[in-house]
Image (cartoon, rainbow, N blue to C red; front, side, top):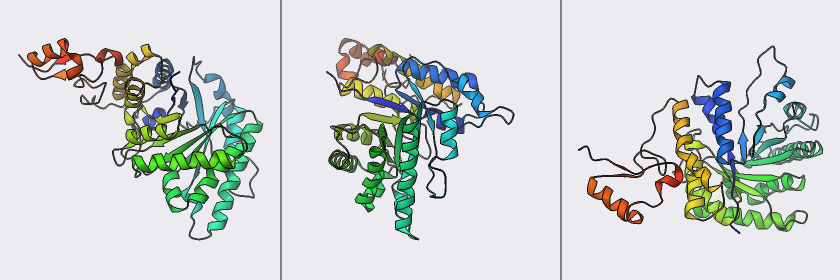
Length: 339
């Protein structure tokens, strides 16, 4: 049986920052397209309700999805004087959010002012947030922000971060290369060592469900995601067309195509690959940016041939000129010759 790769989409989070005219109809259509594709998780942005609309009124507006689960971002409290759960987690539970993500920074453990206090507060916040959400029967996804840099500086303290989340019942751990500076070999080694540590040092686990969120500052987000999966990660986080801060994050369009067509993982249903090109172009249009014709798999030039002779050769011997059948991803072969 093929290994399953799960997907965590953060397109909406960044799209709302770039598309000024994004409205609820656009959001609903995007969510529907992501669901049709076969996305596992779709992270919502943090929209503030209108002043006259109570927060509890938003629960009924959640779209009905066939596969995907909507994820609501939550906040940690790291102050021991606070209640065991931050107020926004209680609000998310009240409005009926079923899957909630919380984040903690591995670099936050390295305060120059008082490192021991920083460690204690961070772990306290993780413990009480995860404990509260699991008590409320919610699915919890823990994002370990700055994990790889934190691990390089102090592996024991970084491991404590994720160990605390696992021990209190987090359903997923997502290791984040937040500044995008890690290399594929580092990603593989750190995730591999972290998984071994967690399996040995938490209550009996044959495996720890974990994922990767790689930023693209070195142009390696996709390569780092592949390394993470090879090291044991089962979930890949990213966005459509690599939308994200700075240089973006892993492009899920490319990731889906590569994992399924090149590496024989099970990611989405085969017929859903046909939706990749349409989805990529739609997000470009929403963002009011021109389509990148050179995008792998889905760009208009991805399967374009220089002249009629090459076009004919590609039709006769496609494997020599095209690394996959363009029709598998909803694209098509074309000839660039002007006459």
